Length: 353
View 1 (cartoon, one colour):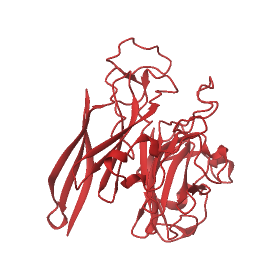
View 2 (view 1 turned 60 degrees about the horizontal axis):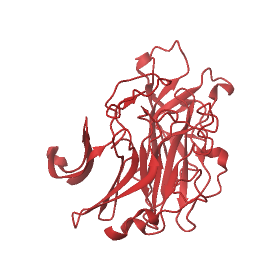
View 3 (view 1 turned 60 degrees about the vertical axis):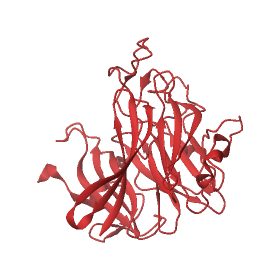
View 4 (view 1 turned 180 degrees about the horizontal axis):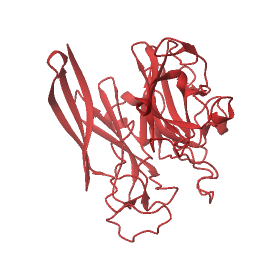
């Protein structure tokens, strides 16, 4: 049995981004590099020092300081395939540039087309001189209408975060294309194929559809996935590290709009009877073999917990391709959403092993 895998790699300092096409022979567990395509040697990388969130600019355009980690380009949900194309998101460096980029590689012709967006990485809580590794760029392609969707540069922002209100009209960042833009010829794969907002820009404060604006607050870690019907879905985390929830939403290619969010779990779970602590989750939602599946570790809001950060293994799946119903734990026992008690889907916990 043979499988093809697509990966990205990056080299630090002046960041170089590559697409790697790997050929895997499963029966012998052999991995062979088929080809390597260089996307750019100008990927944004935080090559300076780790500093505090309120520290001033170091005054050096060649040294980009950061708050969390060094890597932001070729990170997160940055690579997707559609037909003969491979899409990749990245930020262009250096420190004074920071523009959001979308590259498309044609695996048949070997050509590369890249779009530069007006948006520039805004840094830690809108301090552009402090790099923020959480603020990755996710890309999704709807196979039903050929639209491109981008979510980017967010870390739980809201009208009041940061507290100075500087992102009050810029806390959610979404761009999307016209229909069939994903497969346009290289010379037509251009910025003007993305839908403008009311101010003439390409950044939208919400996803068009029925979900109210209040659903687009305090979101982090965007990721897109698809089911067997070709529906494009997206999920993000709302809230913080130890009081957060996953929520997902489905795109309707017939209308070009998004539906309502479905909350997998809930914020402020300790308000429910029998639950002692709030909790957050670190993991993923994917559609695999006919089911929507979620796996994560829990980060408990308990300062006396044995593990400082997340621990345990939690898993659930839905037989409903939309994820709205039919959720079960690994033993096949049903439960309803939102989930308040993570122990209902616990597989194991190393703290008690």
